[in-house]
Every structure is written in C-alpha cells, then in structure tokens.
Image (cartoon, rainbow, N blue to C red):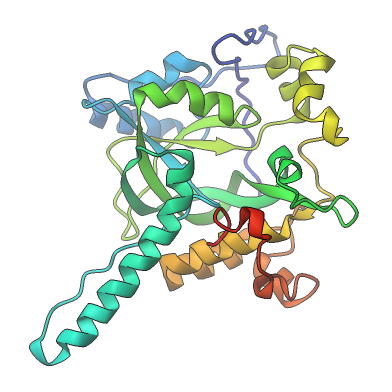
Length: 313
C-alpha cells in the first residue's frame, strides 16, 4: 500500500503571512467556475486528490448557488444515516420502533457536528477514495478538557492522509459562506483539500467538498505561526507539546470511543470501515486490532461527567 504525497504548499488564511515561493514547491490549482459546479467537479476529477485550498479565496468557488460549502467529516463528525423502510400493516409497530431508533441514532451522532457547526445542512453519508484515517495528531483541546494522558501518550486525535488503495466512509454536510473564516481558524493545524466524494453506491458528487488533511510541524510553525515561538506557545507550548504530527502516540481513549460509537450509529458498513481503515500512528495497526489487544476496555469506559455531553458517540 503506497502513501500518496501532496507536494503543493499552503498559504496562510486571513491575517497569516503568505508562503514564500521556492523551486521545491509547486502549487496545485483548480480552475473552478463559480456558476458551473459540474465543470468544477470535472476539473477536480482530473486533479484528484491533490487539489489544495491555499487561501480563503480558494474556498469561494466551491460554494453552491445558495451560498453553502460542503465539508467532510471523518472522526467525531460522523453521523447516523436514515434508512427507508416499506410499511406493511402487520409490522406497523415494529416499523415505528425502527424509525424511532434510527432517528435517535441520527440525532445523537449529528449533535457532535452541530456542536461545531450549529447551522449545518444536508447531513449525509459518503465514500472517499484514496485516503486513510490515522491517529497521529496531537490535539490541545484534549489537554484543555482533561482527557489527554501524557504518561501513556494517549493524546492523539484523528487526521486523514492520502493513501492509494484505501477508502473511507465519511459524512458530508454543508455550512454557510459566513462560517468559512471560523472554520479555517479552528482547523489551522490542517491542510485543506478539495476532494470529490461519492455516494455509497459509487456516484460522484457534483460539488467538491473540503477535507482537513495531514499538515506538518514545519509548515505549521513557519507558515501558520510565522516562525514565531510565542504564537506556537499560545496554542501548544503551555501543554508541553513540542510536536503536533507524531508517529509515537496513541488515541485519546475518550475520543476514540466517541468516534467508534459515532461510526457504529451509521450502520455496519461505516462501522467496519472505521475499524479496518483507521490506523494507529504506526500506520500498521488497525483500530479493530488495537481494541482487541492493548486498547481492550476502552469501549466499556464512560467519559468524565464534565465532557460526557460531548463524547457520547
């Protein structure tokens, strides 16, 4: 299994300084029409999967005519999928029970996404080819909420990275144009890619979606922090974090349980996909293997009361 590489650099969004040009860098660009989304999708297919959104202006061509942009969710932003059932009178009460359970799964999982994007719309399940999930990103929010364990190195959240032959079941939802600046600032540690998901039955989306992919420590410090140690310290130094993207960390236990439950609420396909196509930072051990060995017991643990409303799956 070969890991695809992204060679395009990324410039800083908004008030952050731009990336200086260099012979070793090349910028992947996508010519997108603001009024012809089908042309955008066609262009993206030819460039997939290395189309990088460099600054805020690159997000705007991905907007739908009514001012929404699609976002991919791959971890805590996974949601439940509504399934249609045919009503037969003898099974009326069973039908009501199934609908009740399906709806409760959907609302429970969607709550995680809405806590981040309260006005999201068109929440649905999709498939994304050419990427894998990896627990290799150190998240300061876990330290802030008291659920990181530095002693055991159980401190990582999820990221995704290009990888030939891998396929992810993800969610896609839409946010408004006005939410893009906050989205970029909130996900400042990630690389923004325009990707083209497909439905679970293999039909390509007409409009590209934004994916938060793996970045690098060098780019984050030199570009996002403008080479300023004080800016870095404000986000990471106070937690004694000297490296964001690592291959020697383990998943935050509370967060991992939350993601697994969210995937399970999506159904068997999404659940098995998460277990088989999500890896520890070694890129070898799947989450299914981890939960059956050294991670055994994680799914039986309850989140601390202070964060239970955030990490209930």
